Length: 148
Image 1 (cartoon, helix red, strand yellow):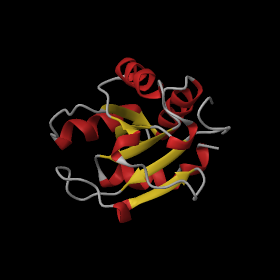
Image 2 (tube, one colour):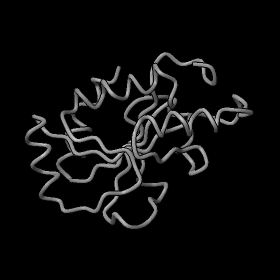
Image 3 (cartoon, helix red, strand yellow):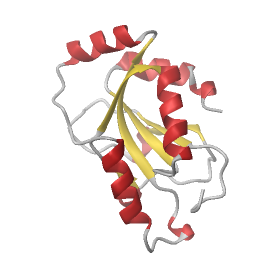
């Protein structure tokens, strides 16, 4: 990476009960990455509707940004399950309005493949995952070893 000398993406999981408000710092947990990296601040995060939008925002933010500014993160709403079909079913039952944030619905393995691609393409140094269902949160915690 140009801004960080890292071999893998940083992955932070945000636990939150209320989908409408900000996430308190105590509700973040690192799934992958160095513990000395601070919880991603709002100014170091991208909220994009898709990866193309994320790439455009990333390019704009990185211009003139020094390496000391810290890592850049992409926020992703996630619904994961044992199969993509099951994840789509869970998502359809949630009835959550679409937000201006990247959305991933599928398997944990597919999500971690996406995260690795985001890192390899230098869109972001890592991601902050926002599980939309409690089941997704459990799946991510159990499967975090797939990131490495």
